[in-house]
Length: 190
Image 1 (cartoon, one colour):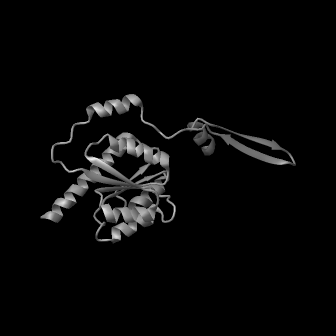
Image 2: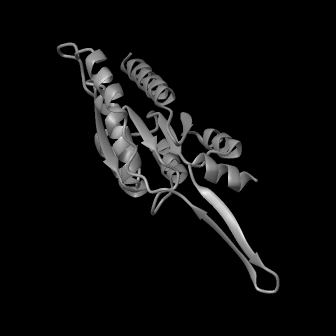
Image 3: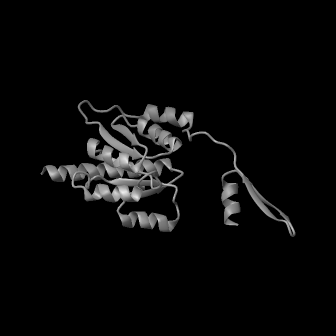
């Protein structure tokens, strides 16, 4: 029942062919899709409502560690709405660690299932490094079971968001991470 419901929620069909003494064949069909794109009207609206960056305001950096080009493209579209943000991307956990140490972003967005080193291990390495320990790391993962979320938060992620990404929830988490980074920076400067 669960599998049938999931396939139907994704617009697919599922079935079985069975013959006594021969065996059973289970199948499902899903439609092809392209990279998730924001609605044109929504993107145009976002561009119109974007306030200009105040003169002299610093551009803040966000690092996204993600190996799936479609997921990266969606986040690029969301971050592009914000004139005050610049996005860097790394396609695996090891490169993500290297980029975090090099660019010292205000916020890191981290997929969990990455080639090489997974997102949880990469996050632990970054938290153990005094250079990057203060950076809030937000998990963006398709691992959406409540136990996955709880395990990720217990491991040390600042927030844990599940895919498919809910735009408002993502933007709120990003803003909270940026505010956290600013507060941490101000405390360190005092």
